[in-house]
Image 1 (cartoon, rainbow, N blue to C red):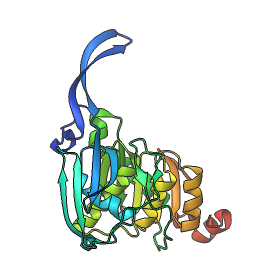
Image 2: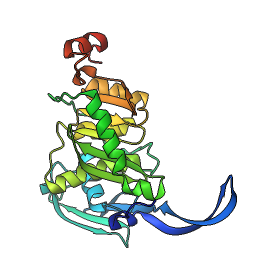
Image 3: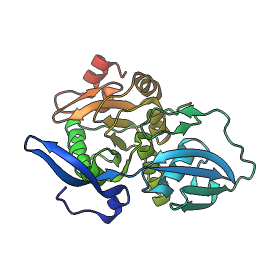
Length: 277
């Protein structure tokens, strides 16, 4: 809380919220930061597509990323125009294809921010990426040090796109799945490649998040906590290395351990022990 506050982070929190604090010294008055939450509606070709509960940051990235991961757009050229209005809590998107029709099958996601998904199928991921497990743990430590919103208020999820050495893009939100969409949207807007990168997350990796990562052609997904059983099944089928409980000096590798190589364990040994599953 004593760190210098990034003005951009202040958009995602409400300051000076009064509360009564209890500790072993007794009761005291306090004021704290808490996460902001908004209902944000996306309209496509003047039709309401979805309302997402989210943090009011990087909303343009959220819109573009959501449309891409749900298969509504395949590249930025599909978007003829986009107006994002935070005050009205909406985005108005016009597509270059005028014959767009709203998806009819909607799946409620498990994310704590609430949301919906229209695209249950996944995409296979093929990648030559190999990385030392120690480098993943170092990345997770760097990642946790860059979470500005979380440091201010807590109660926030974060995800990051990384290469083998550095954090490239970071997004924070009250919804875990929203952070993936914000990362993809920012990468599309900045013309950054997601293929052959790592995706790091503070939260549980659910099946819809794994499908979003596969859509981004991410070969390695790393979480501070656990994936769900279905996420593990999808990761095994789609060729994604899924890692959980990556903290301190240890991690659990649920699928495709052959991408994790160090001096004590060569690729052929990993394949024999884990059989690439």
